[in-house]
Amino acid sequence: MTARKKRKVIKRPKRRAPIATDSVKLSSSERELLAIPKSEWEMAKRQERIVKAAIRTNVEEAANRAGRSTRTVRRLMARYRVNPTLLAFLPRKRGQAVGSRRLDPAREAIVEEAVDKWMASREPLPISRAVEEAVRLTKAAGLKSIARNSITRRLEMRGGGAFQRSPKERQLRPDIPNTRRALGIVQADHTPVDLIVVDEINRLPIGRPWVTIIFDVATRAVLGFHATLEAPSATSVAMALSMACLPKSKWLQSLAIDLDWPMHGIPEVLHLDNASEFHSEALRRGCERYGIRLDYRPPGHVYTGGHIERYLGTLMRRIHGVPGTTMSNVKARGRYDSEKHATLSLRELEAWLTLEIGGRYHHAIHRGLHMTPFAAWARALGKRPVPSPEYPEKFVLDFLPVISRKIGRSGFQMFHIRYWDPLLSHLFSESQRLFVRYDPRNLAKVWVPIPDRGEYLAVPYADLRRPPISQSEQEAAMREIQSGGRRTANEDAIFSTIELQRKLIDRARLSTKARRTRARRPVEPPSESTPVPSSDTIDYSKPAIPYPSETWSS
Image 1: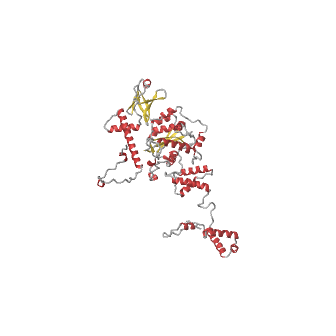
Image 2: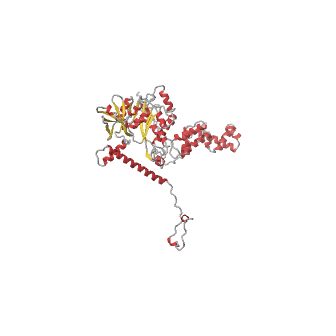
Image 3: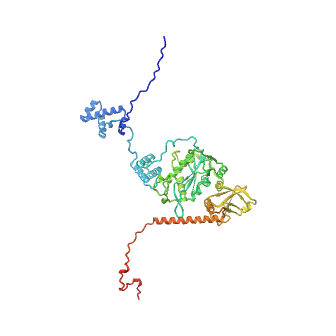
């Protein structure tokens, strides 16, 4: 016998009927009907026949024929009266009906009031403003709190939008710095504030400031900030770090604000991006002096600074509710005139930021922590002592920018300006080259390290009649002098140029203020005066009638 070779059977998939390309497009209701299971559809048809038989004859007879109770038939008839179609007999989903609301009338009225205020605001506000207003009103009325989703849905029904993150943005990256230790990892970053500020004298718009934020990763607490009209620099980092590492009692007293802001201390790691001001020699030496390790983001890995970037976005959305906001972009701003509505000065903005951070943000539930940053700080810090600088006054100076200069008995020169102090002749009998620290915002004095003491000597101008100037003013004056053909500049030329520039700015501000005042002043309509008769209508033959003031009484 020869073995028969078994044929290999290949199972082919069943061919589906081709779909006609010229088929009629189904409507939304027809698509829903086709999605209903066949068993449910057949049951609905049987129940419809029972109801129609009961309508033709009577309930008892229809119930006997169908083998149902009269109570069941009456229940089916009640559903048919509400919706006299076959769909009335389809199985209904359990739970609340679509479109119904669970809030009681009192809380519903509170949500409507919060939504009305949100919609009526002249400045575009984030969703959190409406949520905070609803929470405030419910607490004042002694009612149960309202969920954020309830308020969001009502805003969307009224045309308001919510801030949503894409699924890609919600993905967690393994290389994002994270810690549970307070002051373990601290992030720093700058951003332009979405707000126009005004000067404190004439209350005229002067531009958008910058803010530098120091942010604790473990507790999501803000340790410090610095707002300035100057571009980000090493000084901005130094001022923000000094606020972050030192207690804030003096800062709060200077603003006349009474609140508790306990977050401070020297961090273990300072996480930064690759901006030039974060690579300054002054910052590196200052951090090494106080044991702070610098950690920079890898190039192209912007998401590693996601903690502080997210907070900066949250802070700017809060700023969008302040008069004078510029919003995030031109499209979002629309026709809103930011300069016209600008209200806050730089100092008032600092007070607003202090209240926003220390008074509201630190005491609001953080959705990533499920607790407030204030509580997270207390839990993460525990009973550990807060690492603070031993000499607070010296701490700020250790982070200021430096310039190498040769210091002698007769003083030294910086920025084409001579500096001198009587103590230099006693401290420096021989000339020495040292690193001199300065504050770019005010060049009226600089700080010279005293050898072998670890202290600084504040050295003012040699000519104390000179006014305080900033480094940006000095550089602008140098450009003006050099544009006139002079290669070198002396001290008198610099200060005289700065004085002329300041007078020019003052005149421009006054003229701008006067022009705006005239534009705001209402134009009075011309008064209807009695027309003066021409000389042709005067009869000079008649005697002139004197005015009462021209008549002398005896």
